Amino acid sequence: MTNLFELDKITMGYSAIIFDLDNTLLNFELCERQAILDALEVCAISLDLHEISETTFLQVFETYNSQYWRQRDVFSPHKIIEMSYQSTLAHLKIKTDKTNHLSQSFWHIFNNSAITEPDVDEVLTFLAPSYRLAVITNGFVSAQVPRMKAAGIDHFFQEIVVSEAIGFAKPSPEIFHHTLSKLDLKPAQVLYVGDSLNHDYAGAMQVNIDFCYYNRKNLALAPEVKPKFMINKLLKLLELFK
Image 1 (cartoon, rainbow, N blue to C red):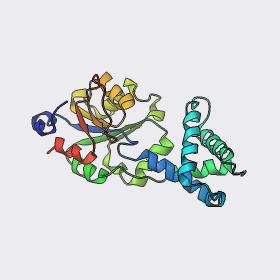
Image 2 (image 1 turned 45 degrees about the horizontal axis):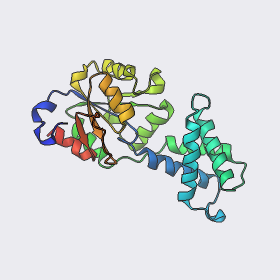
Image 3 (image 1 turned 120 degrees about the vertical axis):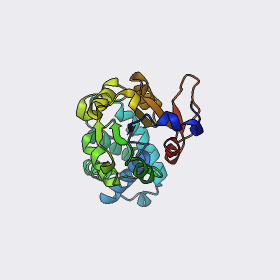
């Protein structure tokens, strides 16, 4: 892994920087949790009335939600969220007939709001005048693009590539090749920044794109995992380009 203070000559060769979206530019967990709770408020379901804390509700919801998302090939996202609310409310003994309304409210709130990772605006503002910027994200067009607009960051990017739109998801090399083609660039001209070793690192390695691991939780890396660069704060990305 290259020392951040020995990079001036190395980083001059990049023409573009491609970012992952969730948990790289946008904080997915905070966005999701806020939407889960806000949907309860929209549907007038009070946790206080049932003496249940927000933390408890979120913990139960996320347990069921993670189980149902494993069946995303069978159920639509709307149905998965509805089932997650149904199971959570039943588990916590909260009676309601509003699970469909809860799901609809969640999707509207989630798809039209955003919480960015720290220093995102500063980083993109610094990079945009000198580098072509793009996003590769797994997910749905109806969610990812509006969330970027809600965060006010969509205008920074020349290309926003969403897995649903092209039929391939990270770590598939096809989604990276597609993005390189749209940018008309070769792998050596691009740096990819992401938080997932399974999706971002694995995908970038398959197509020989240099990878910067945004290690936002300071996780220990296995010996065989060797990203080109590693940062634990997005602001440190700028040290590569000064």
